[in-house]
Image 1 (cartoon, protein in one colour):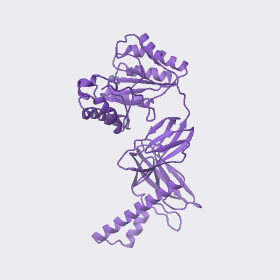
Image 2 (cartoon, protein in one colour; image 1 turned 180 degrees about the vertical axis):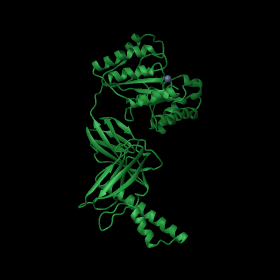
Image 3 (cartoon, protein in one colour; image 1 turned 135 degrees about the horizontal axis):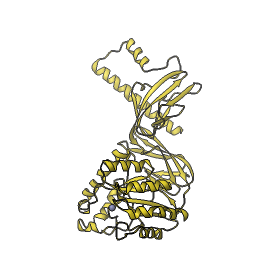
Image 4 (tube, protein in one colour; image 1 turned 180 degrees about the horizontal axis):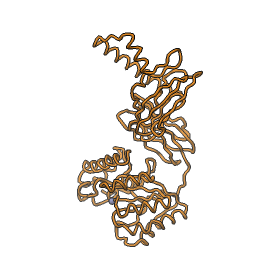
Length: 413
Ligand SMILES: [Zn+2]
């Protein structure tokens, strides 16, 4: 904590120095004279506490812009011991504030921080921007590795963990080693970001239910209802959607499921003709989803899977290139190791049930391929029984997340 504080102070001192230097340069250039009255007025409007008490920083006239996870010390480097300081945030879900005036960005939005220093009240407008960490805290299962995609142009210079035994960090990859809590810090040139990591123990037999090719008005709501009734979370690999689909995707996200990318288009001929065409198809849906659900999703599944042979007709060897390119661009792709067969020659819910339950293996991550395309009643009718089977046989249902180990097929093209 002291190291973080030291760093924040360095940043603030540097920022203040640059700010002051800039003002002086500006005054010099335009030969501006400030009379005493002006100074006094400025000080009053900036709410500076006088009389040897604590002073609040000179930023409170303005909106302080911070990122998600960013730590910003509103009281700067002052020693607050012996003073009566109280801090409040009007919206704790946007930014929290500790009693020593350190603001922590939580989610995109605006909040007002009020600081009472020896009964003098100061207010700060805080705007949390979508930069820095994707989230301010993360719960991770022991044994998993979380890849942190740092947002924005700020480059991380140094990563740090306050407890190597619980969670270690290297170049933005956090490995969960032992049950407990750790704080991961990212230092950039301009700021300090921190993220709370909670490592929780996990069952080894896991089922990830995944639904491809949605959303659809006929299937998706029914699947969501069954999942809700059973308190099971799943992952939806979606295609491009209209305004009706948008509502369904919002519902998926709201009910705790993972919304992931299948592709803007599923047209093999169009998407597998070149690497550029494929990446455009992927990025286009990521951008659209960002507007719908408010965060960037990096979880994806190739149409046809990474082992597909159909892409050979359009570009030889493209899958070998794509598996590397998607990773380099920040994405994580998931194939499956249990297939329901519901997009192939399976026609009854009994067959879907048998394919899934016979494909499950204990003590591994079972990624189950199913579909929520229009009219897929066989899967809808089998879903309840599949969930009951999983629960009664000791499996844990989870969503695919940024820390889930990827399940890959062998690439064949
Ligand atoms: Zn598909």
